[in-house]
Length: 191
Image (tube, rainbow, N blue to C red; front, side):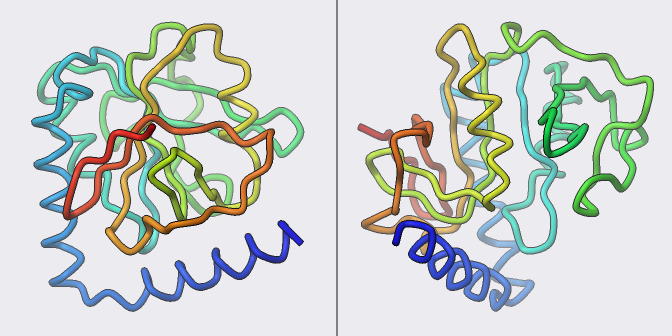
């Protein structure tokens, strides 16, 4: 039942996200970027772990460039395999990225692995979120596995368009909650 509900919601959000025209997407991405970089989450973070946006996801490329220019340490995920999960690797620019798992940009061989305990802020990908902090990812479980291994609390902030914030997320006890959501309309601090 939960699996079917998640699949239906994933499909609906992807269709809505893919239907955004490029000018609207650019405007929304700029609003999300401005809210994020002026937030306490970003201002107080030294080491940021972020996804590298792909397809119709909220753009993180601008943020990565901006944060690097502001002397923030930027780490991005590298998927070793479905079994072993994600590694956290530091990048110094887009020259450190190449097409990897799922055709998403990932760090190239030789990038420095970072201890997850050094991370101050995690920017979360996902398809749908609610105000209580539940998150619907893409179904691979990579972030949930990574987050369960963290030894200390780290702010986990989702970047999403307003329609990705929904009333109900079909969540299970294994799903890790996020702390906030930044959309093109608001910054939501989850309960």
